[in-house]
Structure formats: C-alpha cells, structure tokens
Image (cartoon, rainbow, N blue to C red; front, side, top):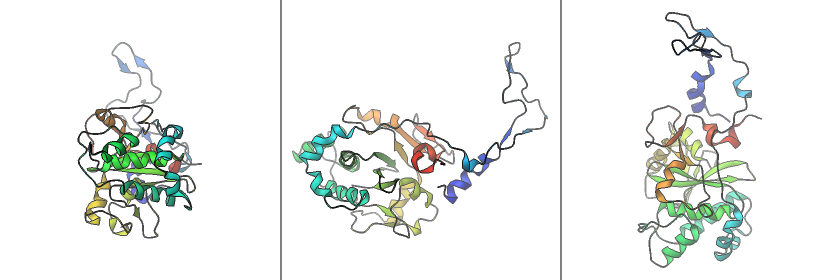
Length: 284
C-alpha cells in the first residue's frame, strides 16, 4: 500500500516520455554516437504508459540474506527463550516480550572493545565485564533471538541510532522494535509501525505515539525525527558468516526518495520503497 507521501514523490515518474530516438536506437561507429539521438530543438517523443502503474509488479533490486534459524538454537536453549514467549498470542506479543528480555540483560555501556555481532558472545562478554553494549548490541541480540524462532528480522539504521524490524508472520508485515529504549511506535489506531511507516508520518509526527513503559529519555518529537533518514541492512547472517565492523556499511541501503544524497559516501541508496519492503508493496 503506497502512502500519500510516497505517491507525491513517485508522481513525476508516472509521466512517461522519452527523448527522441533514445529507446532502441543503434550505435553510429563513425562518430561514436547513438543513431537516432535527439537533435537540438527536436520535439520530445511521447510514449504512453503501457499498463496501469498500480498493476505493474516490481521486485526488489537487492538480495536480502537471513540467518538460518538452526544456527541460533544454542542461543534459544541456553537463554531459555521459549519460556520468555510462552503463551504469547502472535508474533507481535512474542517479539515484544523478547525485546523486554533483551533490555533487561544489562544496562547501556560503552562497547569497548567492540564485540562481534554474535548474541552469545555479546551476552558472555558483557556479563563478564569485558565490554559494554549500546544500541547496536541490543539490536544484534534481539535480532538473533527473534530469528531463532524462524522469523525474518533485520537491522535498521536511523539518525545516530540502531533499531530492528521483524516480520510478523501472522500479520504479514514489518514492524520496528527499539530494544535500547524498549519501545515501538504506534499510530492513532494503536497499530505498531515499520521504519518506513514512521518516515511516512515525518511531516506530521503528532499523530504517532511511543509505546508506554519505554526507557527513552529523549522528547518524543526528537526521537521520531531520527526516522527522516534510515537504512535497511541486507544481511543478518552474522553468526554463520562473520564480518568485521568496517563491513557493516556495505550492506546498508539508505532510503532516499527525494534524491537529496545525504547518505554516507560509498553507501547503497534507493528511491524505491519496494526495494526495501517488497513483501508488503508488490502488487498482486
């Protein structure tokens, strides 16, 4: 479902026209220019839409890689995660309980030395006083806890902060979880939102609310403003395929529908929400 804000951004792309001869032209080997290239003052060629844009089925241009849940069963068993979610009515309640459990494992502290993105190592080293953990460490632990139950989950980078999104299998949609602050964001109807849906309300965040019982010390408006710019991670297989800290950025895709270009250099970007949310936005 495309929001009003997204529709405004996409509207210019729905008017299809081509510069004369730019589609299907050959190549002139004499002057190395495309044959049929538009000449100066030549009128534009009109090309009508071939199909209703709403009915065109697109696919994500990126490949998402998720951890095999079998790799994470030691974490699930050693930490007694089945007891944490026992009796939960659906994925939202189960994952919310897991988020609360993760947040209760330690108080925020500087991750120095920076631990690898493996929940078992993070928990071990923090419990032994070897290091600390902040937003990213809470996210890695929650992400792998959720994945151990067979549900897709992924890291999401917002302005100066890390959160995750998990796929609610019973509702067939992505929702955001912030384990550092133990919160989610809801709309006026009480529906929990994804990072994209929070971004869609960035022009009028007053309709959004942070869930009760959170541990966020920021003003709500300041917190929600972080979602004006976000990136979705393409990988979460950090246990079976270890990587280094400086590898993380190559697997982030920044959502930049306006083409402002404020993302970090050498990062991936997309102007299409469907690249990041193909399961929810692809037409049937």
